[in-house]
Length: 116
Image (tube, rainbow, N blue to C red; front, side, top):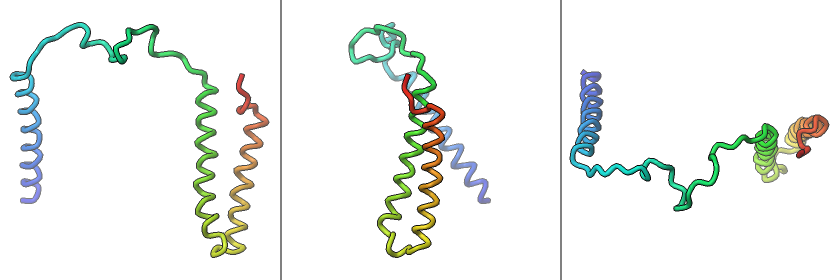
């Protein structure tokens, strides 16, 4: 009985969706123009291809930024609660910062931060 109600509800939702789409197609105005098929560019005609090739280095720097930005997200709660966490919290945060620091040194030595 419970699944019958779920099936009835799903059928009603799908039926209403199809009915609304059909009514929109049948009752709505249809004035196709070539300009309507072009992408909207704020009234300015297209000057170049919108798909330009980006350097992989750009994405690498973006990912590294996000990675080291997340470090700040972990540092803020520790900074607020550093007295309550005590020496154990200080040790854990030291380990975390050293791992991230070693990662930064590794990325730096590999030349990922060089923009050429």
